[in-house]
Structures are given as C-alpha cells and as structure tokens.
Amino acid sequence: MAVTYYALLTTIGAGKLANATALGTTLKITQLAVGDGGGNVPTPDASRTQLVNEVRRAPLNRLSVDPANSAQIIAEQVIPEDVGGWWIREMGLYDEAGALIAYANCAPSYKPQLAEGSGRTQTVRIVLIVSNAASVELKIDPSVVLATREYVDNSIVTAMNRLDYKQSVRAATTASITLSGLQTVDGVALVAGDRVLVKNQTNAVDNGLYAVATGAWRRATDADDNSEVTPGLTVTVESGAAQADSVWQLVTDGVIVLGATALAFQNITNGLAKLASPAFSGIPTAPTAAVGNNTQQLATTAFTQAAIAPLATVASPAFTGTPTAPTAAVGSNTQQLATTAFVQASVAPLAAIASPAFSGVPTAPTAVAGTSSTQLATTAFVQSAGSAIIGAAPSSLDTLGKLALSLGNNASYAASVDASLQAKAPLTSPALVGTPTAPTPALGDNTKKVATTEFVQSSFAKFSTTQTFPITFANGFFNRTASTCWTANGNLYLSLNMGRNTVPESIQMLAFTLPAGARPKYVIDGVGGYSVETPLQLGMYAWSLKQDGTFILMFSILAPAGGTNCGYSLNLCTQLA
Image 1 (tube, rainbow, N blue to C red):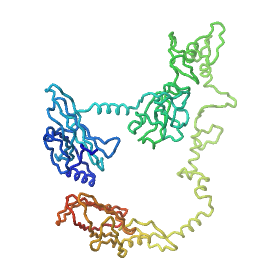
Image 2 (cartoon, rainbow, N blue to C red):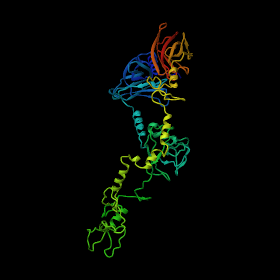
Image 3 (cartoon, rainbow, N blue to C red):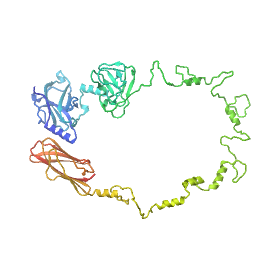
C-alpha cells in the first residue's frame, strides 16, 4: 500500500539544516502550525513556504530524538480544549526566523471547541528523518506551552531515577556470578523481576543494580543510565542469609560511565548493632553517668569505679591503689597522716654532711677568677676560665679538635690550597684548555651569554636553503595552475589554486597532510564565500591548517544550480614549527 500521510523537509529547511551541519551551529525550531488544507488533504511539497490554509500557529511543547531511532526527530504540540472549531489536514514546522522548515499532511481530524459542547485536549506530532539530529534545537518559552501527561510522567520517573536512594533490592551478591538466568543468591531463590545488588564481580565495571530474567539480566531501570548512577547511590537489601537488612552505598567518586567505570559498594550498616537485644563484641563503650545517677542509663566501668573509689572500712582499712590524704603543714607533730608530700617537704632542704649525693640543680657561690683552693668550682667559674684561653674565637674553632676538623686533618693544608688554586682560571681574560662547556642560551637570545656550538647550529637551522614539497589533491579536487608548498628562511609558504566540479546543495571536503619538513608553528583558520556566474552558483568555504601539517578545506554549495565548476585560491605564509 502506498504511503498517504508523511512529512518532509522543505527546500529552505534542507538548506538551513545542511548549513548548520557544515558550520557546527544548530537550526532552532520554535513553532508548529496546523491547517485545514483548504478542505482537502494536500500532498507534501518541498517547495512550500506556507500552509495551504493555516488555522493555528503556536510554540512547540517538545522536540526530542526518537529513542528507537536516533535519526528521527519528533516535534510535538498540545492544542488545549478551548481552541478549535476546524479540521486538521496539514502541519508545518517554523524556525525562529519564521521560515517553513518542514511540511506534513495527516488524516483529517476535527478539533472541536469547548463552546460547541464537546472539547478535548489534542496532541499533534511531526516525525522527521534527518542526517544529524544534533544540528536541530528546540527553542521555546516554557511559560506559554503545555505538557502532555506522557511528558510529565516521564519527567517524574526520570527525576526519581536520578535520586541517590534507590528502591530496595531482594538480595545482594556475595561473590562474582553469571548475570543471566534464575539462580540462588545469598540463600535467596530469585524469580524473574527480582532486583539484585551485584557488587562482587571479577570485572568491577559490571557491578550495579540488576533485574533478574530467565535470559540475560539487564540493569534496573532506575540505574541503567550514567545520570542515575552517581557517587553516594544507596540501596537496602531485603533478604539474604548474610546480608538481610543491610544498607550499601556506592563509594566510587568522580564521573561514572556505566560499563566503563569500576563500581565499588560499601556496607554502611557494618559494625552497627540492632536496637532489640544487641549482641556487642569487642570493647563497647557508652557515655558515663554522673556519680550518684540512679536511672536505667548504662553503668560504665568508669561510673562503677568512681562510685566505689571514695569508700573504705572505718576499722583497720586495707587501702589499695594510691590512697591520698590531706598534707599536714611542714613541722606538724601530731597523729595526722604523714603524706609523701609532707615527708618530701620535710627532707627537701637536707643533704648528708659526709659525701652528699646531690640531685636536681645544686648551686654554690662562684669563686673569684684565679682562685686555687678546695672551694667548689661552679659552671660560671669554669666558663670564665675557658673564655680567657679561647678569647674571641668562634664556637666552630674554639678547640684544637674543631680547628683540625676544619682543616680536614691536613698537616700540609697551605700546600694543598696552593695546588688547588693553580688549576683555576682567572676571571679576566682566562686561557681555557681542553673542551670547556657552558649552558646553551634559548634560541633568539641576544645578550652577553656564551654562545655554544649548539646555540649557533640552532640559529643557522632556521635559515636553510629553500625546500619545495609537492601537493597531491583528492576527492575530486584538481590543480588549476601551479599549487605548491615550500619552506625558506624559517617560514612555510603555501600557494593553492584548485578547482572542483560542483554538486548543488552539497558539502565537499578536501584533506591532506604536508610533508614532515613543512609544519606550521601556529594553527591558521579562515572562511569565505565565492560565486560562479554561468550558471549562477553561490557557496561558502572554510579552511584550517593544523600544527601537525593537516590541511582541511570545506565547500558548502547553497544555490540550486549546476553544470559548472568552482575555483579557489589561497596563499599564506607562517613560521615553521
């Protein structure tokens, strides 16, 4: 059966889309119009610039790429129930400049108006097949368009799927498994549709949330897109011999690409005890209640010790640990307990008369310099005597040992220094021997630095003799006269004079790489336009010369005429790399 209803790009729309693709811009579609076709269903015609009989034009509600076919673009508009009273037999898409971009016919449909006694909200769609969906953009004012129920439902699901806290899973893996078929995981016999946290795969890029199936498992719908799997994703495990009631968190940081990024999950309930009858292990701790507390608060060992610490029997107490008591005043002579502090304070100023063993920092009067008797010699007396010997010598040379160390224990130090100086060159007019070297200055340096042979050779290299390189054209381009490439005096020269048989409404490209000896120092780009008068052709071109020697030329043929060829000339000069 022949196709009766279809949509197509208009001639204007096809040209604008091709131009947007060539220049890397986008074609902005803003409005959709409907018409009654003048009473008949029209046949789509690419030359149309307006509808047969337009009855309504309004902004688009949605422009999206068909998820089942990336080459199809779906344009959608919602017509409210209070608008109507006419038939719909034709539709058209307009860009922001008001040009008709696409035209379509459709099966006749009457759109009633609410005032007629029957009203409905109607959605109309145009499906276009384009070569590059990325070159088409929807431009709307969100405040004046309506949303379909499908759009709202999809938006809610999308927003919920992007939440970090996911719907719980029935079980979680404990080892690497085959991601297909019905099987038992952590003691749970899985059935089709069960959600499973897969976290122990040998290849960690396969970890994630999955839905069980009799065949190959698929990632869960709330975790099958990069935007839905982000650091901090959290999920609860419902059942399992080892992992029931555990909570797992995705601890992989940074940007995540499903199927390429290794995913790591961590049990954030690990180490936590249940509220009912917890079985503690290790050394559990708790806040210590105040002394005297008489409630259901846990009694820690610190609380118990603090409670019994001040207690002892009144009669003949047997103290343990380190008992303490108030310290009596020095000189007290009563039945009050003598603490260690009292004893130490009493004996502190005393020393034995015969052969005392002093502790701490004992002191004594300093004898007069030059004294020679049995009087104690204090550190001040010794330092004064030593200073008189070394005079003003620095600390690094104030002993014979330090002097010998400074001279390297060299008994012939003067002769060694003299021999070392004989091997040095004078600063003024030095007569160097052997193969002296020096750092090589940067190329182009114009100072008093020493010019090494490496500097001189690099300087001359930029002024070598002229080298000419041939250019080979391809993709239908031909040499009109004398196209060539050459280098001279550190520069790269490129002279192109070429032709190309034209194809209306098309884009042509030439690309070639200059020889290794012809590499530009900079990237050079350019654009322009051209025309051929017999018959008339208009076009645009863009070219680019990369630093790796790649030359790219793009032609865009705009006017629908043919039968001739176009010519292009380019001359440029730039520094060599």
